[in-house]
Length: 104
Length: 145
Image (cartoon, rainbow over all chains, first blue to last red; front, side, top):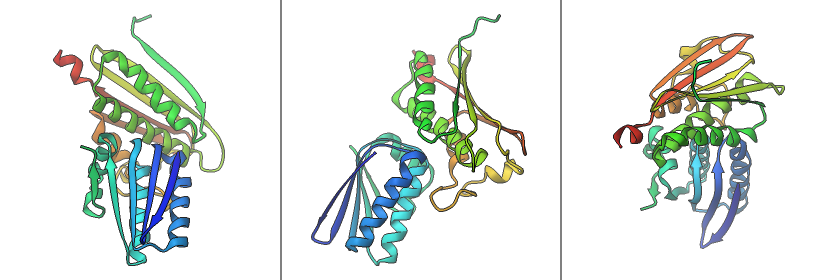
């Protein structure tokens, strides 16, 4: 799974690519957490345009990143979520805690 | 022998095999001409079941996991994920949403996903002997055609 990072004007953006599962999630979570700790952004964006599949491991990635940003007093938004990941997030009521925007 | 199509594959409990397992199940189910949404449901459920075996059945060593798929009826796919690991002492508790013994990187939503995305879910487990998860999904797109 690929993780591209871009930091601009206090916004830390992660563009993920590939399938998010238990195998890939641990590495992705570590990369995201390390980068947040290094940059201390006010806003974090997870761009999931390149993620065609996730299982419940993706929920843990969103919730952990949300918690991490909240601890820093910042915010998380999740963008470009495809239909399958959106269905998984909805099934777990993730939207209650983390707003996510679906691909139209 | 009853004429019924099926597959049976066995693999070690390495996390790299999660993608392999869910894609094998999706390819097997493809003969029922499922929608993308139905394929996504099957892949999600299989990924959850196989991940459970990898994380919980064999926490400290590699073990074997078996994936079986068959078509008991013309528009129904049955998927069985079996392991011979530590087993689950309290199956109803393990199936509760948000319950996990897997630590902070697990969401505790595995069984909820299997239950929500498939039409039926049966979990049989004996501590010390292993766990068998049986899931069925009716492929509606085929029935509608």
